[in-house]
Image (tube, rainbow, N blue to C red; front, top):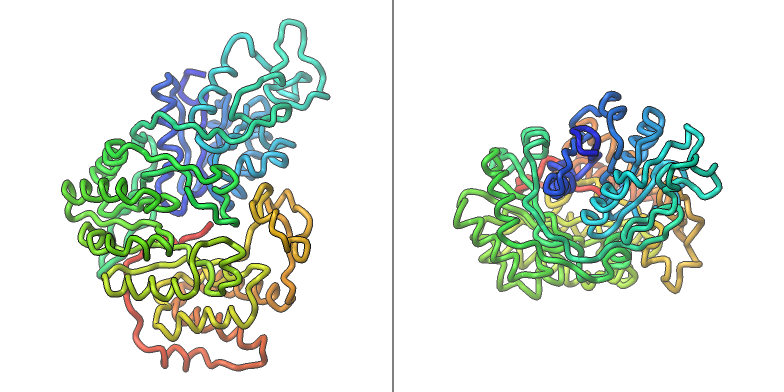
Length: 493
């Protein structure tokens, strides 16, 4: 598999930025002597010819949306090129391995995927492991044991056993060993012009993306990283991160998103990188994701972060209902959220929260309190309306499955949807979530004013309690909206 096109790397969605999880793997494959071809189907067309020419297809699934899209790609590959080996890699691959390995995938890899994936390719291309596809009447590399045995002279590839590679016959867990990091290879990826931009001060800038750490030391129960990394994280060498930033700035990036699950998992490491970034590119801004508890514990660092070019900070607020926050083991309270907004307001950095407002523990009253929190504090502009519609996903392996009260709300696994079903104790909340999601989608398609969308959401919630709200009057009463720095792609999961 050394010829260009033998290995196909596919990204379906990475939050509107140039796919980091392709760029990183491309560099490591090139060092190993492989000429992989990347395709980002969010902005590019995956052709039938490219599929036919591939022997190995790796699909990146770092998030739920990417997995849903990747499923369609895998089925298409299986239809057009049955002999191709299909590998899913990323956070959501290993969690959903049992379902993926039924028909769509031949292997799945979670954790630090680069090493296992390259070892898998090397093993599959070895002369001793030649294989035929199921459609040819033999066992492919990772086919079920009940299929017909390989013809004489062929190796039964179902016996393949590699640590970090899950197959139908080998139940390997995630590979959590430090990788030998390389500078991501971005030359083959679509240009930054095809991706999200920063909007700030009436201007737009091309936005790049990189990561300074992998994994996370925190164990939030709803997070897909928790069952994979179990509280471990790895720092990427500063010189690697800076070289990646340098390459993107050369391509026109005026802003960088640091996509770490928590940028302050290692605050010293984060500041070392941002100081060097600012020294070399003083006009380049950045954003990062930081937990509420870290914003408060490390509040003395925020002024410097602002001076180094921090345009905004994303934080997984999730809810302002303390019961919900305790069930998710978020490590902060509703009072902490209010304090974090105040601290960042004084510092001069916009806080852009992400929310998870529909869980089994949220109530209609606390959902309305959440809406009131943003309205009364004049924070509606800080958040994209889609966040008021997000419903809890519980993938296989989720730490939430061990919750003491799970039997009260947890349903059956819907493997095809990659989540366990659950019902809210108050059926009105399930209907409200559907209604809000529909409203937000329609508003997005109509390019509606986000403030107007917010009050339309509130009107829906109030209607459940037989209260009325005049949306136009509420918008007028709210007053002029603030224009805050933000990316043109709404954050989603």
